[in-house]
Length: 579
Image (cartoon, rainbow, N blue to C red):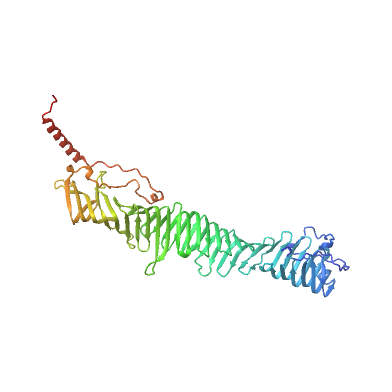
């Protein structure tokens, strides 16, 4: 847009003697810095009057300045102005056009208004009342008062206006239009609408060529069909054509009742795909769960999300919370076989979990949040109090009402270990193992264990001394059978049933050596155990291994006596002497 208002260089071919015509009453925008000095004569800058029904000079009208009346047509350097009346201020190089004014410029843009003014010295102009600017590409701007500076090629309004490009309509209190770059700077309650979305902000720049909006203040972009799905940012860009947003400051993406935040974000409202980097959080208030990490992706249409770069998830419960961490975390929702929508959480590679009554590790963890079922795959290990459970796969079943674990299923190589007496540091552990294992909880503690298939157990047996009334170690029982049922009484493990090919033997402490006190695959782990929720944030807390005291004192004493007896017997035998 080369010209907003007609360049009126007031050297008309029609001259009239005038006594002392008064200067024009100017808009503040049009104040002449050279104090109304006449413009020097320049043939190329002269205005050509193409047509006027009358050319009038009346001392009583327009302060004695001449004016053109009736179907006025004026041409200047290819631009054409039409109006009902045009007042010429020759000495000031100034013009006023009144009534049905229309300016058609050489670049194809058109301006219409009820009134126009233009100063040929400063090349600034004003259009008033029902102003409409139409550019060659079809963008239409409507306002009540518009200002223009031809030198900088800027148009400006601050009385409120609308901008329509055929696809979207923009409403703003004020706007500055760079006609060369076709960029519009919008301030003070900006609203851009199309058939699907509404953008509302305070300070944005809209590019009419690219249809990209630069956001420089608090801004919301809302989905018309689902107003709960919207974007908020204080800095970024938004493409009105592709509906892609790049968000860089205090940004939030609201979708499917979830909220994604991050330092730098991208979101495509059409595909529903978004990314976030930096301090990323995905909050799901309905599920009472949030994810955090250094990088995240969301897939709105699949209702799923992924988090990487040190991710962790927190499931907030009424009385407790569950913490998950791994190299990658997925969350998603889908319909089950009964068309009931359920929520899932999956943690891949070096997965860790913390809850006050259970802590665990595995290569991967899958959690059905709706039903409270958790699967732990590949080298899983779960701790509860001073008890440890391992196997090929562990399934944990949470009671969604009490928020505690009801039971565990260990599929393949189930192995449960518990400290025989948590009050001492002796190397004494109850153990039970087998192909399939079911562990039942009472409150927050493991209460019962049932093992099926190649079931074996090593249990420490205690009894109460009738005289001292104190508990004393009786011995160790080795059990082997098809099915074992056992109860935990405090720390003690009591075998209550051993059926199908049962073999059970109890040895006093003096008769059983350390090689029989533990199974070959004994794997009690204190180095990697998760003891507080922050431990999940690293691959392993790498605690110093607990050193336990030997519990073989009686066996060693008995062995020493046996060894002495053997030595004494050996000494009694006659010695053979080589001849």
